[in-house]
Image (cartoon, rainbow, N blue to C red; front, side, top):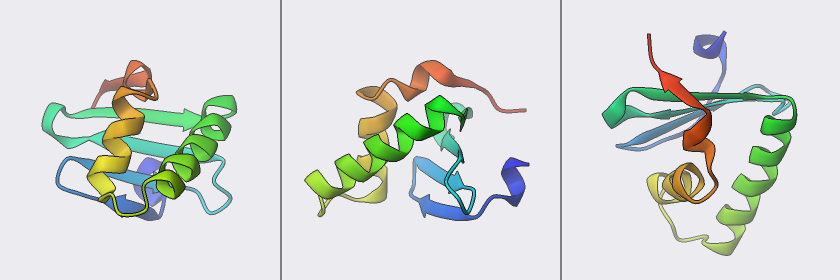
Length: 83
């Protein structure tokens, strides 16, 4: 299903995909081949965190925003190896 989700953000290190209703997100860390598949409460929390970081740091690149969420937001703990 992740491959059918629309692309929201794509940088050199991170890719973010999301369902149209933002109830499902897929956050990929390309260098290590890790993916966090977020739905339910995790997706709700991610949506809020993503909007907060984007609004607090409007000049940040896609990779900077997603790296902040990956590291400081703790979403890396929800990731699994691709494939």
